[in-house]
Amino acid sequence: MTAIALTIAGSDSGGGAGIQADLKTFSALGVYGCSVITALTAQNTLGVQGIDPIEPAFVRRQLDSVMGDLAVGAVKIGMLGTPEIIAAVADGLEAWRPRWIVLDPVMVAKGGDKLLRDEAVAALRERLLPLASLITPNLPEAGVLLGIDPPATRRQMPQVAARLQGLGARDVLLKGGHLEGAESPDLLLHGGELHWLEAPRLATRHTHGTGCTLSAAIAALLARGLPPSLAVFEAKRWLGSAIAAADGLAIGQGIGPVHHFHAWWSEPRQPRPADG
Image (cartoon, rainbow, N blue to C red):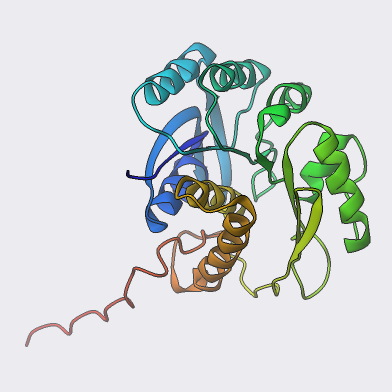
């Protein structure tokens, strides 16, 4: 069967994050992608200029339409925005019960723009975390979910991951990219065991959509049948290559996207000299 993954997220008009990044990731990893759009954004590499949430009933209609026809192997959840949309998504997932649910608790865009209303945090914590096979918060998001200051050191991360798991998620991938230093370690809590995913901090500012892309990659690999820990490790490795290749793109004037198709695109051709 063809592996299929579903993304439930907002649209990024600039193409670097959200639905667009997720679908690129699915395609790059050999998975057919489908989508449920939760919000429209006016967005580019310089920031978010506007957000227009989708009517919750229509979010649910999209979800029912996809799940009623396609054999979805894994679901990735990104930007949801409001308590009403969270409730619509949670109700739909409880009805359809997909095997794998990867929840990226998107709260703030790379440029600092808020993507989740304050009143929606409780709904996310209470309705969706207990449904998640895996949650993938960064350190600030973990702090918001737990109502604490974000962890600032590597030593604090195991306890924070355990507390997040206590909210109901089966597994936790706590992303350490906000730590200081030359390394960017992530911590996976899976099956009661802790696994560190080590990676050097790459020297590029073009990291727009990294969180969306990582969670989408995990969902894609789960849809292809990889076990959870291997899916996380392989997704992290693939994302590292996409970040390393980001400077090979020239997209926009601000924080550009990672290179989702780094393994597929050839080097850009030099312009041909004018005839004469």
